Amino acid sequence: MKGLILCGGKGTQLRPLTYTTPKQLLPVANRPIAFEVIRRVAEVGIEQAGVIVSPETGHLLMEAIGDGSHWGISLTYITQSEPAGLAHAVKVARPFLADSPFLMLLGDNLFEEDLHEPLARFRNDSPAALLVLKQVPDPRRFGVAELDSKGCCVRLQEKPKSPRTDLAITGAYFFSPAIHDAILRIRPSWRNELEITDAIQELVNMGHTVLGHVLQGWWLDTGTREAMLHANQLALERIPSGKAKGDIRGHSRIEGTVELETGAVVEDSLLLGPVSIQTGCQVKSSTVGPYVSIAAASIVEGSHVDNSIILDNCSIKGVGLLSHSIVGRNSKVLGEAGTTASLLLGDHSVVELQRTKEGRG
Image 1: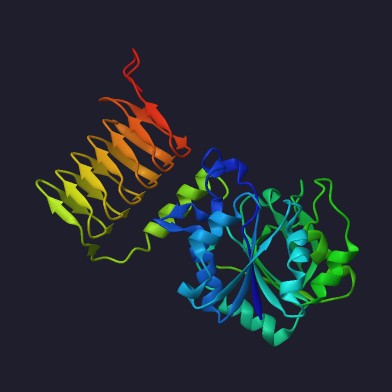
Image 2: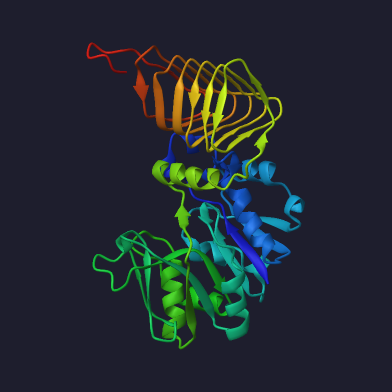
């Protein structure tokens, strides 16, 4: 079995961050999302995987991820010339996939559970495809699967106005080579894309068996700021205790679980876990947390930061409260007492906050 990891797309809902960084390389708990996706592929024993990249950001992904040896997997990069749909990505990858069954994962989706159980069912039952599903409160936002009493898919709908079930199709799919014939039979959707939902429905129409596996744990598509921050929270909650190895000085205090890398300095500050702070960071006269990740070489001084993702080499100074924010690399947020902000900043940004007449930022 091979793997196929989709890391194309433009990440429009996370702009301006994604003008300079592929969304799959944005971090949660200071670890790029794509790294976790690759780990999920490797941990089920897959030794070869293709990585679909775009012409605009492919080189950044290749530089960050490398050849896959870090995870014990061999990676082949495949360029998709345009974002023409998930089924189009499979079509582009056909020379790499050949006639092998494969696990396809979206490079910006995260799962609490590993994929051993659905993989075992795929191997034992030999369907044409197996979809990993999750019950969601608002299925209108997703592709939706309808299952019969045996767990077989009988109908698929893409973002239906009146969903027949609450089972969303997540970013994990197991396919046999039969999917390639199904893709050849479908036509582009109204978005002018080859939809993977249409291809799977075609498998059903052709008489093939398509199974559904319903997850019990959480699943996140990290395509928005809200989803990124939620993923950051969940990832930080999984940090093991006893990882505060940095330099803690003065009247500092730690409450909860804190990951403080060697080379980070905390002085006269309060850390409210869960928090992850990388090497080279300085936290002075500040309160950080809960649910904050701060990447390498960043500075937080005279500020309060909670529920935020701060990328590398940033400076947060004098801000009364920075909350619900993602701050891009090499950025500065400067404030004064009493100022508050919720920001989504691209790399190399500068924001100066001032108190208004009402006393807020």
